[in-house]
Each structure stands twice: as structure tokens, then as C-alpha cells.
Image 1 (cartoon, rainbow, N blue to C red):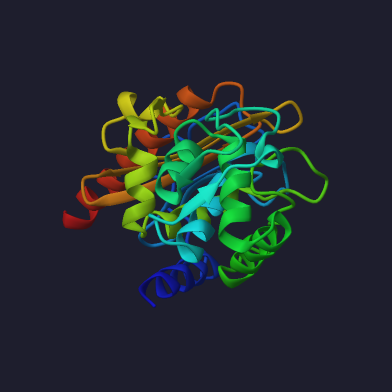
Image 2: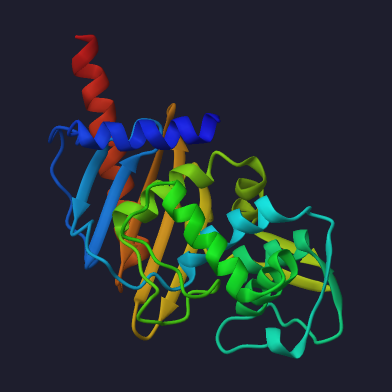
Length: 269
């Protein structure tokens, strides 16, 4: 119930024109689409083409993880099959091995394993198709009207897209889930004899970063969703089709926290 209230409050804030006043110099980013949002209030601090539908690549796996957490217990075991082997990033599963949902979630969010995504989908819902239907149902529940999922891993598909705005709201919802935060903020872990390292370099370069998800395909380009908690505020940033995403997220957070600090200072004066 708390999460639903948070999402509804975010939507209400934007409907009421919840964009922060220009208190600091607006940043310049390379992304085709971008947004910086206060996850606690839904206020948009910066946006660029934020409502444009675009490919989202492996940032898809934020929703994959959330649906898996809803549909299965962490210690549920899943048998890997040959059908789970797929192109792109991998946690290097082997057909015939048995692995828990918990370990698959590490492989999904740290290594961006496309194999982990398919294993979770089939293991949690019986088929990839049923799992994707749950992803789309969840998107509708959260009010993500410009989001459509065609698979659980983010591979290019005309029916697979979202917007920076929708992904920011999905991120704000996701970081309310302690289990999700535990997975996406882990820098390195050894599971099932595999040592997995998080692809998100912002975890070590931005103070207060609690993770989320990277992504890349030839069509979508580089995509990145991140979250930083600092000075009593939680901000989320999304960039789509951005060849300079690490630096752009750093720039967005510097701007956002400076703007909020200035606003608080002027409010107390």
C-alpha cells in the first residue's frame, strides 16, 4: 500500500506542475532523452525529451527483477535449460544446473545476464510469455502509460520501449523495495562458484549512489537508470541513447543536489 501511495503521489505532483524552479544553472547532457526527479516527491528537476518513446535495453531488467520478487521466493530453485541461452550479456549459466531465484537476481542486476532473465521468467511464471504479460500488467498498475515490454531482457523489439519519465517513476517505485536495493547496490558477489561484478560504475564514483541498472543495444544505444540518496533526498536519473552517460549522471546529480540545497537555504532565510 505504501508503494502505491508513493506512485500516486508522484503522478499527482507532476499533474500539478511539479517541476523545480530554476535555482541553479541548467545542465547540458548528451542524451537524446533524460530526466532527473526527486523520488520522494515526484518533482522533476530537469528533463529533456522525457516523454519520447525509446528503446531501453537492459534497464528493462528493473521491471524483470520486481516481477520476479513478486512472483517467487528467493530460495526457489530453477533448472536452467538450453532455451535460456541467448545472445548478449550473460552470467554464464549452464543447461541442467539448478540455481536459486536469489542467485539469478544477482546475475540479472550485476552482470545484466540475459540468460538469468529468461530463467527467471520461465521459472517464476511458467513461460516467458506469461512473465512478460506480468511485466506489462505491472506497468499499467504503476501508470506507466508509455511503456511496453516484449521480453524480460531488453533485446531490441518494435514492441519494447519506454520513456525517461516512465523509467524514473519505475525507479522511484523500485527503490522502495529493500530486496531490490540490496541486489542492485551490491558491487561484487560470488554465487554458485561465479564471481559477479556490478556494471554500474556510479556505485563507486558518486557519493550515496544505491545503484539501479545499465543497458546497451545497437538500436537503443547506451541507457542508464541510477539513484542517489544524499542529504535527506533521494534522486533518480535516467538517460536514454547517451554515449556520455556516466558523466551526464554526475552532472545531473551535481545540479539537482545544488538546486535543492539552494532552495532549502532560501526557504530558511
